[in-house]
Image (cartoon, rainbow over all chains, first blue to last red; front, side, top):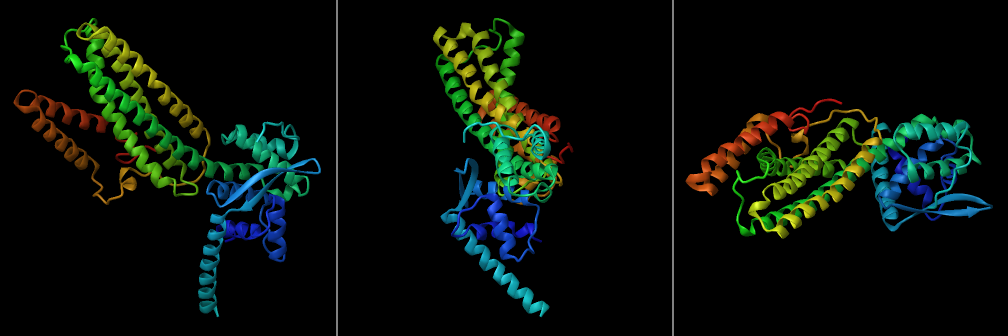
Amino acid sequence: VLKGHLDGLVLAALEGHPAHGYGIIRRLRLRSSEVFRLAEGTVYPTLHRLERDGLVTSRWTSESGRRRRVYRLTRAGREALLVRRLEWRTFAGAMEAVLG
Amino acid sequence: MSHVPVPGTRHGYLGRLWEELDAVGIRGRTRERILLEAADHLAEGEEAEFGDPGELAQLFADELATQATTRAAFAAFAALGLAGAGFAAGWILLVLRGSADITSASFLPAGLVAAFALVACPQISFAAGLLALARAVRLQRLRAAPAAELALLARRTNTALTFGAVTLVAFAVYAVDYHAAFARWQVVAGATGSLALLLPLAAAAVASRSAIAVRSSVPGGAGDMFDDLPIVLPRRPWRICLAFAGALALLLLAAGGLDEGPRNAVAEFLLVAGSFAALGRRLGLREAQLQ
């Protein structure tokens, strides 16, 4: 289930705060109260695809001698996030109504 | 991004990831970037949490294979368009002083083969290129297309490039073999121009070869022409082929008049039907062969 929503979750994790892959994983864990524990490496194919699709940009930075690839949302990424939120709320509302 | 050695790729997790990426055909800058990001991640995180290297490499490959194969198909179509425009211009250039008598070749067997190739190969290249384009347009919308679909796309692309290249070589052979019918400058310009146009086709072929190297594992069938068309047609490939061949033959009959029309019409009908029989499965015009 989580895989199907990984794009939206990664976009949400980057909203307002650029981050590297490890930082994104940490945010997902923290915000989900440790419920979202996916194989950490799987976030990178997602990030690379989102970059190819123009939803995020990235660049190498150097922190304490370490090279890190930092990702940030583009305008298209912010718009895509809004759409995904709307879709999720519609879906979650419908599930809530059915399941009670 | 500059090329720098990725630390820790000789042994341990990064070494295994390097091998797995290599095994699925991900090399060069893409592999370097993946390894650098993994190395940075693992400086803080646990290897066990990062995931199995083989599964991670395959995740990358599934997505990259789709992107690389569709891009290669678009590049091939652009190269073929350039070659096609050059071929048309060269043909016009060559027949400025009238066409050559088919029996006037310096070496008749080569002349006849070249003349036949100049009729058949551009048509096959164009058809295969269009089929590749149709599939590339459809697959580019998918995140990770089935491996069999990508293999068929690559086959169409390579077939289009191969027959396009044969057309250009045949043009050069034709110009040289029938040189007596043309001015020297026409022969030199035609032969060198057509051979120069092989370069973009070669570049596209290299791109296609690199794309095929990235191996998707996504299951699914290869599909056929009917999956790629924007309109719904009855799945009767042979009937459609014969109707298409018949329509082309009628056009040539009308265009050629009483002298050449019937001969051209029969030749075109046989060419289309024969090509369909020989290449139909390879190009996914009917049920494609599985890998």
